[in-house]
Image (cartoon, rainbow, N blue to C red; front, side, top):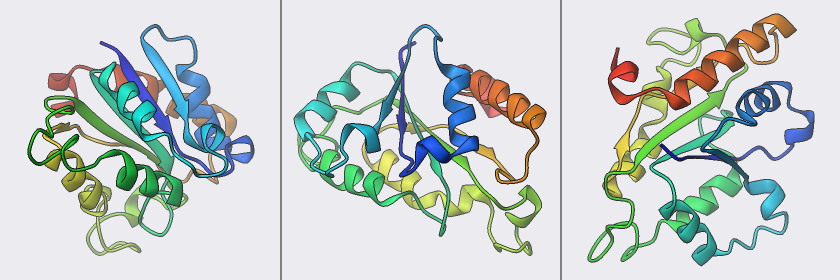
Amino acid sequence: MNILVVAAHPNLENSRANRALLDAIQGIENVHVHDLYKEYPNWHIDVKREQELLLGYERIVFQFPFYWYSCPPLLKKWFDDVLVRGWAYGPDGNHLKDKEFMVAITAGGSENGFRAGGDNRFTISELLRPIQATLTHCKGEFLPPYAMYDADRLTPHQFREQAERYAEHIQAGVKQLAR
């Protein structure tokens, strides 16, 4: 299976968490990393190029830091510009049909904080619903997300463990993820 990881971190060089995740998947056969902030520092997204890129992959993973309960602004712009009517959805919008989509986030908060009654009052799955709705509207299958919690407090050993789990998660079969 060919996997595209769309990385969207506005300051990736200084991110221990997102960098650790990306380092863990470097060199894995059939996994390609596409860094939006490196690719589009001026925010002028080449829509046709991005659409062509998506066509070459069965699974697309959106990896980003989760802050203010959303994705970074360039990724939001990417969704708005690339996933357009007539290409991604609507009449003749079947180019993403049956593709697998996954979200991988890093969060500074604890896992316990992302639950009903927790500090954030909602689960990660609930907070990711707008992205899930977008991708399922494009006729794709939304797979269980990957989340690294306490991203600003992990030890180097914990980062390695999380990164290994991430590499396994993005390559796992659908049945394995459903467990």
